[in-house]
Length: 81
Image (tube, rainbow, N blue to C red):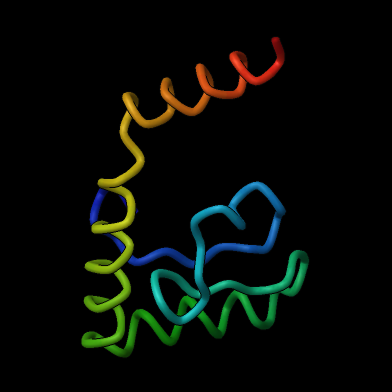
């Protein structure tokens, strides 16, 4: 997403914080090779959809800065007091 590329990903748990299937990526079940292939093919053949997902994903990725991450880690550590 940060590179401005449309993303096809599997639901692996860790990405649930930022992926929204059909909004900023295409999300497929883990180990489902058929759905993964179909999603990749869809983006390869649907220019407008690929560009839309790439643009919305890129906008989202820009909000995930190192400063934001540091602030979240600091807030978590402070909550442990």
